[in-house]
Amino acid sequence: MLRRVVTSASVRSVGYDVASGTLEVEYVSGSVYQYYEVPQPTFAGLMAASSIGNYVNTNIKPYFDFAEV
Image 1 (cartoon, rainbow, N blue to C red):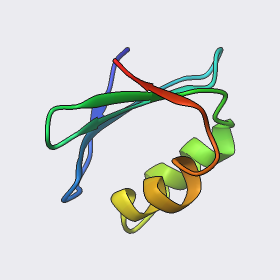
Image 2 (tube, rainbow, N blue to C red):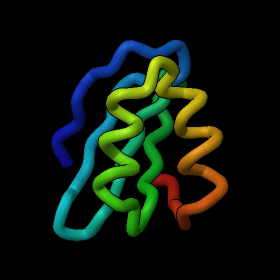
Image 3 (tube, rainbow, N blue to C red):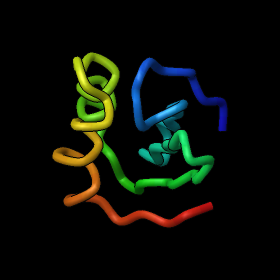
Image 4 (cartoon, one colour):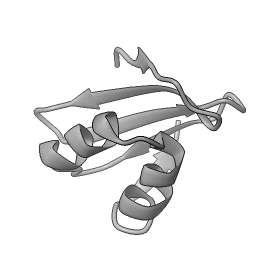
C-alpha cells in the first residue's frame, strides 16, 4: 500500500485503501499496523488532524480491528 509521509512525533507515514477501508499506519518505531473497515471520513479526519498521533489513539485504535504487518 502506498503511504504518505506525515508530520508527527509518533507516526511516520499513513496509507489508505478506499475499496477495503484499510488504513495502514507506520509508526516511528518502524512498526506497521493495518486498521480494518475505517470509513473514508475517518481517514480524512486523520489527515486533517492537528495531532495525527492523538487522532489515531482516540479515534482509530479504540474502534477498529487491527493487525501488525
